[in-house]
Length: 397
Image 1 (spheres, helix red, strand yellow):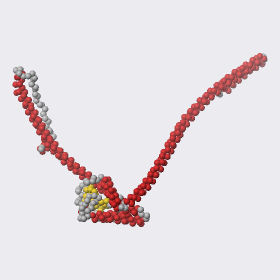
Image 2 (tube, one colour):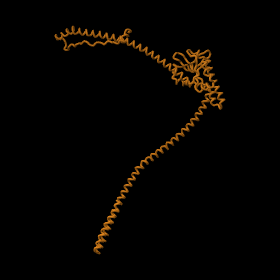
Image 3 (tube, rainbow, N blue to C red):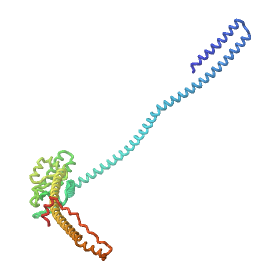
Image 4 (cartoon, rainbow, N blue to C red):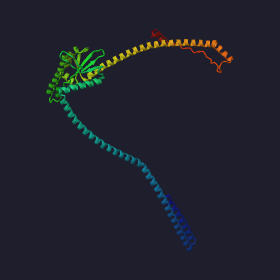
């Protein structure tokens, strides 16, 4: 619409020019002062009217342009808002996520500090308890009790049942030298294995705390000698000749793999020397494997006994079913005989008794109640016909 304004102005100018030209031509033909004034007035009026129209058109065009510009600005603002809004939402979401991460970081930091404090306290407590344990383990009685406790745990892990698979602290008499081994393990074939727990660790604990390699090596050598001393003591007790059914060796349980490993390292011939004296050193892992194998043997023995009982019960049941079948056949036979006797009695009743009884009706001496009829039994008993059971009928009791 703005582009039409110059064109419209040009057309109006041409119209005015044409009008003026006509008037001038008229003047050349014959000038008339009145016409000149009239022409000037008309031109002024036309110009004024044209200017007003131009102003009105311009005003209208400006209003339309303003409205259109406002609409376009609103549309552009909406487009920008539609474009920016998702970005704003993402920024808001990112801000919330950052706040959550910060809060979680603060919480995790607090928990970490608490855990570090607890760990430090636990480490201090553990260090104290370790020192107390090391001090207590230097006492022979404490070590012995601890070894027996570890042996009990191994027994439980192996799934052994007391008084069936093993006995604890069973008294063994001797010529002035009674003994009480920690455990006697029973085997399914009535054999027995003697197990005694020993916990020599004083020299080993001192070796751990040694300040130099030479001292440590000397203490480990002493540790191996201490363990071998227990081997010699057990060998002298000669349990094989004092316990009926005992195998010709004894198991020496050492409650710690490290104790045995240290002895083997210090004395490479330790195991051969111990076995030569019929003493088998065993760590917890080794003893668990041995006891589980024994427990498995006991379970197989129990399964075999159960299978034998099942066979015996099956045989007994089979024989009793045979006897019961014989009795049942007798009952069927007797029922058949009773039915035959009943039917014979019914036939006799119908042919011999009832005809005479009905004569009373004709003589009017009978009561108003008619004599009831009696029907024979047509059902027969079913005989037992099981070949596998008929053989047992000969063993009826």
